[in-house]
Image (cartoon, rainbow, N blue to C red):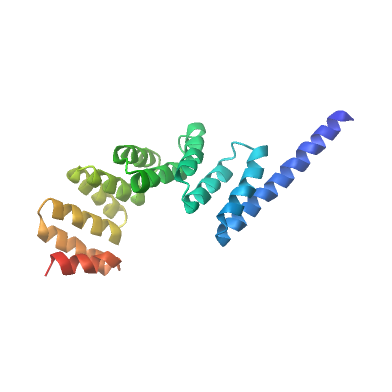
Length: 197
């Protein structure tokens, strides 16, 4: 009898916690990130290593500007599943944009590319981290890969154009700014006006 009660309790708790995770998703979609985190926390009390919920809570923390907490969730996922592409990408983006640790960002995007070698976004972001590190030639190679995968990738053209400017190749830069502009990248028109008159 006692075993049946324990099993019933586990089933009820799991069902309730599943509702909390879904409730968290609804709050997230509404932009109510604090409520989303509260719901995810309740679910994670029952299933502390549930990847989807950890990832979603990390995203909610990002939206709240709590980057260290977001990184803790993403890194917890990566520790148990080193092939979790979304968590690797999120860590790479947060480190690139907010922490400005470009070497570590390059590492994370390179890890993503080992798992998903045709990930144009990972190539673009790795290129940006390489460029910020002063590795302009490597950045251009990463942008080239992104463009080869997605020939209309305007943001990659814009980024490659800025890399060509750093190298002093205005002709190539302006060509890329034109391609970025043709693909409706906002900053491309400004770059054309500033550098390509």
